[in-house]
Image (cartoon, rainbow, N blue to C red; front, top):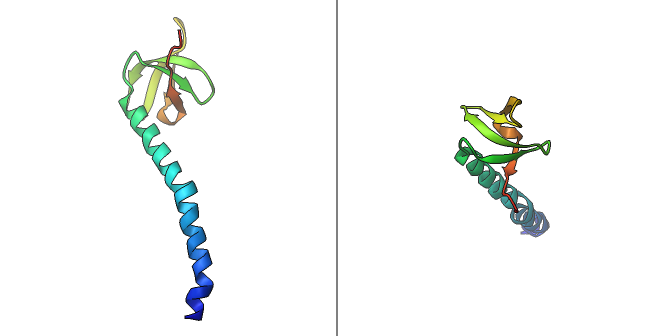
Length: 88
């Protein structure tokens, strides 16, 4: 019984850390993964480097994106930060 009373604060601390830190991170990662999976040709995105570009071609592990009329580059799907929503 004494061991349980000594371990109880640690168990409570681990449970609190799970619900405050780990669970929200998992939900955010799942939401981001679903957003990346739903991207299609013509969608505007923002990369983790802050570059706004348009999806030109969707591949299994990469996106080919068009930065302007002359520049087309290939990026990994991990490099997508978010979908760009025009405020105008």
